[in-house]
Each structure stands twice: as structure tokens, then as C-alpha cells.
Length: 255
Image (tube, rainbow, N blue to C red; front, top):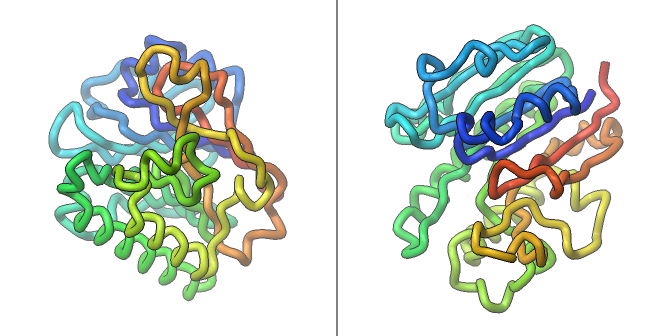
């Protein structure tokens, strides 16, 4: 099974940039999108049901903000919109889709913001989503959580770690949560397979930044350790434009 995750920074802008052409060419079994910035009633039919896919939506109450969408080539077993927390769910940040072999969690983690105003909210979100995944694993289910975590975990995960130690996305509190999360029985798929520097998923829109690969790796696929034998490949598509993020990809050996 091939899965893709992409923070498109606005699905309508991404569509103008060739999202559907890319989807048609890449043909993942699942595409999870974050930062949709739209409600379904604002979109054209081809974005609601691309050829061969059905779509699931969890939009933010506030139009033009946040939101996640999952495109599927198969029928889900069940779907859950959100974590059951009003302050999180009103922002459309989590969509859980149970498939035959695992529960897919499409997540758009909060941005701590430049002045760290949302750090407590971000960490509370992190704790809540960890509890939800842990509960699923205790039920005997496998989990795959993809999306924009808005965290560069280690120094290898951004081009200029020393200059960013006090910046949102690389704060000690955020990185510590990621360390604890992975230590709690989860695997960062890309880093498990690749220990090389220079692999990023987000770049500033400032001129020349992406061309010089001055980026951050903040988009992930993580799985529970029980699913590790099914992990075949994890990779990025940095040459795919249309957003300040690039798609991240995962291949699992499941039917």
C-alpha cells in the first residue's frame, strides 16, 4: 500500500498548482492533506471526489483556516472526526480512518507561533493524540499517524539547528514530547530507514531558500512498533511544488 501526506497550505491554491494532476500521476492508495483551508461546500466536484477516490473532511469552523482531508481508494471500516476535545476539534486538526490493517490518523499539529503563545495548547494536543494512539494500540490495532507535526525532532532535521534553538518547532518542550512519543512504542518511518542529513519537508517562501535546501523536516509518517515488519519504504518528494511543504510518502506491505 502506498500512502502520501501533504500539507498543501490551501487546497484551492494547491489545485491551481497541479494537485490533481500530481494525484493522478502518483496514484497513492491514500492521500492525507493538512491545512486544507476550505469547507467542502466551497470546492469544485473534482476536489471532492477525484477520479477513483472518495474523500473524508474535517474542516475548521473558521473558514480559510486549518482543516484535514483524507482521500481513499477503498471503503473505510469507520471514521472519527477529531479527538473529542472541543478546543481541538473546532480547528479541524485530526481525522481517524480505520482501514482493514490499521487506523490511519491524519493530523495537523498546532503551530506554537513565533512568540510561543500556543506552546501550552500544542503540548496539550500532543498529549491528547498520544493517549488516543495508545488506546488504539491497547485495543490490538495498528496505527499510522501522518501529517504536519510542526516539530523538527533532532538537529539533523533542520538545516540550521543552532540558530533555531529558541524558535517554534524546535523548542526543547516540543522535541522532548517527540522523543517520549517515539520511546512509547512508535517509529519515525523516514528516520528509521535514513540517517542522512539534508532531507527536509518544509522551506520558507523567502527567495532562494528552497533552492538552497535550507529547510526543516516537520512532516512525518509514524507507526506503532508492531507494524514495523510491514515498513518497506519512506521517502520525500521535494521537487513537487505547489506548497511550502512537499509530499511525504510511505509504502507498507499490507493488502
